[in-house]
Image (tube, rainbow, N blue to C red; front, side, top):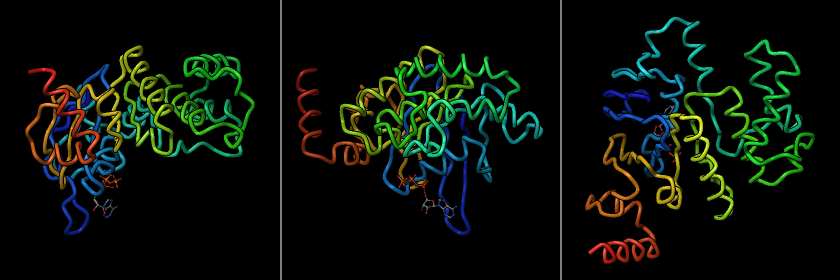
Length: 255
Ligand SMILES: Nc1ncnc2c1ncn2[C@@H]1O[C@H](COP(=O)(O)OP(=O)(O)OP(=O)(O)O)[C@@H](O)[C@H]1O
């Protein structure tokens, strides 16, 4: 569980996060949504310990990042896995080398131990024949699976995913969403996903935080987002005619 309490962050005169408080729950897919520029990336960087808030606190199962020693922060960072937008794989490394990389950086495991773990996580993301391939030789969806495998190879307690669906076709996007949700449940991870994808909101939005101009405008579940009267949320989520109709049908069905 990650608890965010009254977090403020400015760049120069520009206030970007204006008192964000929320709880990202363990074993759940927590989604952060909001228009471009609303502060999602700055919040995620703050959660990753890359940006220090001027005010407010962030605690990870009771540990306050900025109160820890350098060594303790390093340990905590090893509990964090990250799936970057666009996968961010190393082009010159094979799939298995990419996945092994964090272990080579942060552990003293033997090659055999690392190989066992690489085999395990690649199997978990349903990639059994791609070990020796290079990123350029596999599809975008497979690259995303490799990125997920690399993010979980160190057994993280916290998993951060920045736009994990960007660039994927809708069907592959849903498979990736489902995979992230399954892994979240299976390993009881606190997962936070920045997304623009409304399918993700509907499918895996167990907890959704909606940011607007640096404020938390709304939070709730994917079931609640269908029913909310908050105009900023409905304008954002139901900006397309299709989603407006889906919402209407859902509300009528319930009445
Ligand atoms: N290092 C920085 N220096 C100055 N301003 C910054 C910095 N990082 C972010 N900002 C500003 O903070 C605001 C929020 O940016 P942020 O990247 O968090 O938005 P976002 O919601 O992630 O947008 P998008 O959906 O487009 O990724 C923007 O106005 C941005 O210009």
